[in-house]
View 1: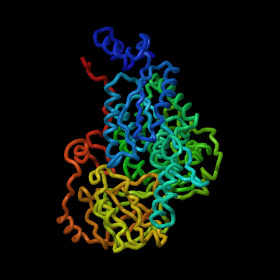
View 2: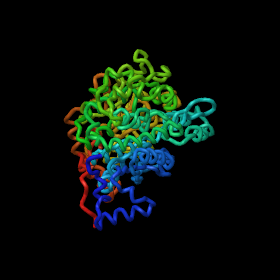
View 3: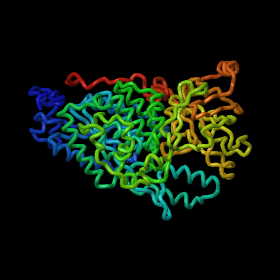
Length: 571
C-alpha cells in the first residue's frame, strides 16, 4: 500500500506520542509488528444483553476479527450505544441520533482506517450508517441475521406481526390467555432479530440494496453457519476496501438510494425505512426527498410473500435465494451499474442467481400488490407529507371518508379506546396526536393503534388510522403515519376535533381535513404547544433540535459529512 494510512498518525511515530499510543495498546498482548503500517480496522459492535436481537454478537465478532487478520489487518473492537427496540423507552427512535453521534465521534477520534459496522435490531442499522457516513471512511455492514421461524402448535408464527394479531384476538375473546402466553417462547426461539419483514429485516435488506453489505446479508438466519462465514468474508473485504480507499460517498449515490427504495417496495419493507434513508442521505450529502419515495417506488410490485404483507418468514426467504433473487426479478427497474462494497456493480453481484421457491419470491405477474412501495400523501392535513404502506393495508379502505375520533395523546388513547360509551364504528377514522419526533418524544411505534374492543368483538380487524407516529415494520393495517408537520409543533393534525370529516385517497395521494380555513384559523389561535416531557439532558436537546419526519428526523446540527481528518494530538 503506497499511501500512509490514517492509523499511522497514532502508531507510526518514534516520538513520545507514538510511544504512548503503542505502549498502552501492547497491554492487550499486541506484538511490535501489529503497528507496522497494516490497516487498523475498527469493529463497531452494538452488542448488549438489553438488545436481545444483538445479544449473539460476542460470538459473531470473532469471525469478523478472523477475517481481518487473514487479510493482513489489525482488528480492534469498540462498543457504541445500542438502540434495542424491544426494551428501550420511551422509544428506541429517540436514541438513534444519539447513537449516531457516538459512532461518528468514536470513528473520527480513534486510530482506524476502515470500519465494520455490526448491526441488528431496528435502529442500530441506521444509527451506525449515519455516524459512519458523517466520517466517510471505508465502511461495510454485517447484520446479525433474523431468528428462526416461530412455531406454535404446529403452525408458523412471526415476530411482531402475530403479537398484534394475538393481542387483538385476546381482546376480542377468540384466543385464550394461556395460548397467548405460550406464544412468547414459541415466537422467539433462537438468537437474532425479527424474522418478519419488520424494520430490522428491512434495514438489513436496505444496506444490502444500497451496496453497503455483501450479497446475502439480509436473509441468512443468525444461527446459520452462512452468517458466520459472511462475517469472516466481511472482515477480509474491509481490509481490501481500505487498500482501494473505497468510501461510503462512492457508494451512497442517488442511484443507490433509488435502488433501495424500489427494492423496499418489492419486499414490502417497513415504513421506518423512509425516515432512516432520508437521514442517511442527509449525512452523506446525497439529494433525497420524501417525494422520491413515491416517485421511485410507486410502480414497483411487491413480490416477496413475507409477513406482514404475505405469509412466509425470513428463514423461508433465505432458502428461496434471499434479496439477490428479488433484485434479479426487478433488475429492469434498478441502476445495475451502481457500485457496491464488493468493488463490483449491482448487476455483477446478482448475475446468475436463482429463485428456489416461487411461492416465497413471486413472479411479477403474481405480485401481492401490483403497485407496492410507500405512498406519500399530501393535503391540508399533511402539508409536509404523510405515508402509508399499501401492501399492508385493506384495499377497500384505501379510498375512505369518515368522521374523526380524536386521541390527544397516547395516554388519552389508552384511557378512552375501550370505553363502551366511545362514539366510534368501523367507518370512523382514528386520529392520534402528539406522537411525532418532538411530541412523544422520539416518534414512537404507536401509529398502528389497537381497535376498540367493542368493534373487535364484532369481527372488525382494520380501520383507517392517522397519526404523526411511526409503526413497527411488523405491523399491518390501513395506517397513515409520519404526518408532517406533527401536532406538537402546531401542524394541522393538532387542530382535528371529534366529528370532523376526513378523506383518505391513496390513489390520488390525498389526505384532506374537511374543515374550512376560517375555522382552522380560529382553532390555531386557541392552540397551545404541549409542555416537553423532560427539561434538559439529551431529551431536551433532542426536542429542541430534531427535524420533522419528512426530512428524516435527524438533529439539525448533525446533517452533513464532517469527514475523517485526523484530530490534533491528545498529549
